[in-house]
Length: 205
Length: 205
DNA sequence: CTTCAAAATTGAATGAACTCAATCTTTTTC
DNA sequence: GAAAAAGATTGAGTTCATTCAATTTTGAAG
View (cartoon, rainbow over the protein chains, first blue to last red):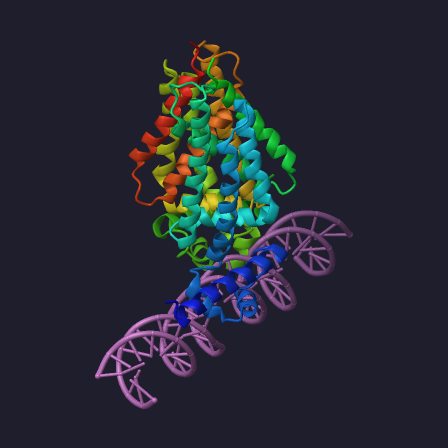
């Protein structure tokens, strides 16, 4: 079934991603040259371009894997949300933030966000975009779950609200990664202020 | 008072920005080389780097001037907002969107947004960031004005709400510039859905 | 008006992402 | 299992953005 060619292909992809991941995390984005990644992956620079369209797309592939994990971790919260609306939202978002920074530095997030805007047609940019949509959906699902429990007004559209909440948490995250000196605690605080206000607005009376 | 040196400096800055602006608008960002800008501005490539830290910063300088205009145009709406909350918000945001696209293509906006995230320490990146804050403030001012008129609940924090509304309109704009094929009308529609929902939530009963 | 110091300009040199024609490997065909 | 076709790999070459040592221009002081 899986011919030699196919296996080699999968293996090379894996090696390139692993080499890039290790080096980006250790040195940051700019100092790592395609040649370095290629050398560590035991291929030539040209081959990297056979597998990924740009250096940036390699980073986006790596970041996308992290975002997948973030979404997985979020499922637990949506499946069984805390009693209070503000606390439920905060729990989910805290999850996102904490998980996101576990493996990727602010610098790598800046690069990834920039790349996804700058080159939205690239294959992994599109995957990244799709993951943003899935995050939005997950927030919407949480809103819907709370609505089903009667904790949020029934006359509201959970998917529009999910979009608003996501825009807010995403914007706060981007401001956070742009400010190298800002501690994670500040991000939590800033977002909580917004989340609390939204919870107040949405709450069933 | 203004010595020759100072005058030449101002003039060179102006020439560089003018040359860059013309060429970026005509050809897009990538095809324009620093050498081209320098040639049109009658200076050498090296001199461009004496005035701006990177090619990207030249673009951000140009985009910042547009954003200033957008803010100026917004003042009129805040000074005398339409009667209805949803309409007032929509009017302000429509202004932003329409004005933004008058002179800059989606591609240039993508580059600018990407640059502001990627290199947040650059001089014009910081100016751009400050302008984002001023936009947020302007939205907050509108909320406060409507609140003063008794059209928005008094127990809400206008500055937090302004932040939420700005995050939403900004995210929608970024999605719009990322999708080369998306017509402006879709952006208006998408944002209006969110704005209407927020207006519903904030409205004094 | 010279002379000197400070500030700016210049363009050749550097370095890294990306391309592509030549070469090599794998698969298919007979 | 040999030959041809299809698919991959390779690394030298190209193109810019950016840097920097040498040079030129401006302003100040005597």
